[in-house]
Length: 83
Image (cartoon, rainbow, N blue to C red):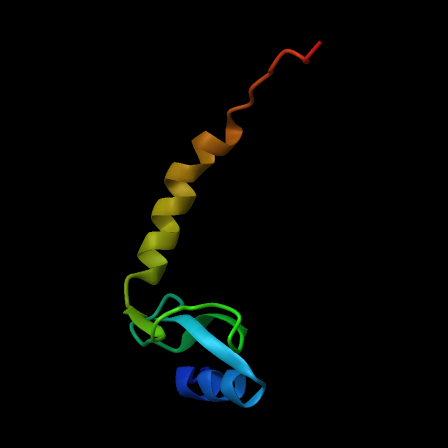
């Protein structure tokens, strides 16, 4: 099942919201079948026209993040307590 970006954008608008950014993505296949949508209340920001990104490389990006973020997440730091 896919989520049509246009339907999501329409639902946001009909509910009194403003679309900011929408990224249309794939989930492991070649077809862009879903979307990630950032929106706000209408007139809550002076944002320009909404941006729609088509990202067929989404799963590749997710793999890169998984492989390269993990070592950074494992680093712990210990700061002395303030006196």
